[in-house]
Length: 287
Image (cartoon, rainbow, N blue to C red; front, side, top):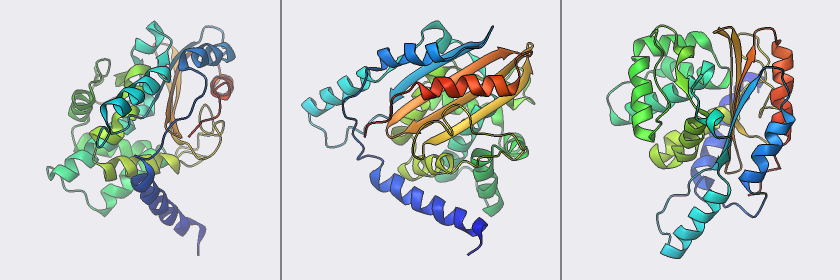
């Protein structure tokens, strides 16, 4: 079998695993998120840089849970949710993080029957997430009204700090917050159809080391967290004289969001190293 032919097989196996196991994951005791956030921030060192951190856990569906079990679930979620305050609530340019919103919305609309996706469209969706392919995102943004897709996802998931770009042609300048991205990833298995949530997570879990544009995606959560986390990476230069380098992940049932902004004088290599050091301060996932 050719190496390239293995990718659809791997994605299919991961997709089946996400559908069967996604609702069965349970978190065991570990460090409280309020203790983890300072460690992550302490490991990040870039002159003039800003790091927004948000941690939480994927929300277990309430189906079949007793009142006591629901209380225990909520207590676990509260213990595992924390961020760094004003920085986590501040809107950042999304760069490629917006591709998560585009993919979720198109999966949602296709299931509702309001759009029809052909085989090429499905390939564009996967490339946009796995390889962070910009031309794929641009085509889908134009064809399916990207600004409205962002607004619709923000409404469905309650993302108060997320908005389309001022210039509708610049999808990378969509704005969001670390808190919003953490909320989106945490609620994905509940808000999206199970198969759609599983598909998006499987595409994230099979992200390619090198992006479509040749950029090395192995920074932050990708290449630092153990196992096979579901990741999405973003990078962009420059908005208001700053570079933006972002990394999000679902590892076990933990959601990790790291959004960074550095002066243009800081190289991508320096920014990548700093974000990877921050991710390395996270304790191993407990499932």
